[in-house]
Length: 78
Image (cartoon, rainbow, N blue to C red; front, top):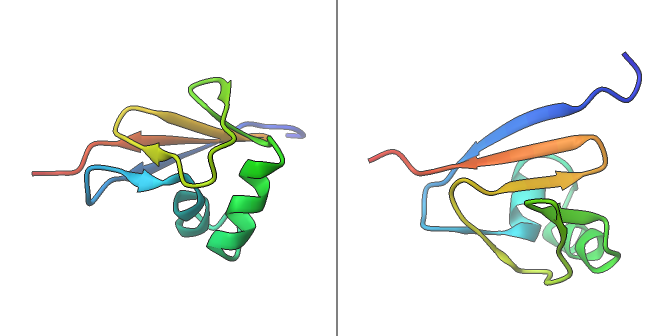
């Protein structure tokens, strides 16, 4: 399937994760710095809105998208 949407999930271990670190731990980029560059270039959206803050705090129930990748952020387990 060409251009299929890749749905990923990330479970928080803290109250939030910075967007550049989320991209890194999900394997989208090799480093936090590369994640910051993608955000600064306007390639990343949070809940459908372009996000330009390189270290924006991503919390539970938010959706981060980059190209055909969607990352659903889940609340941490208690």
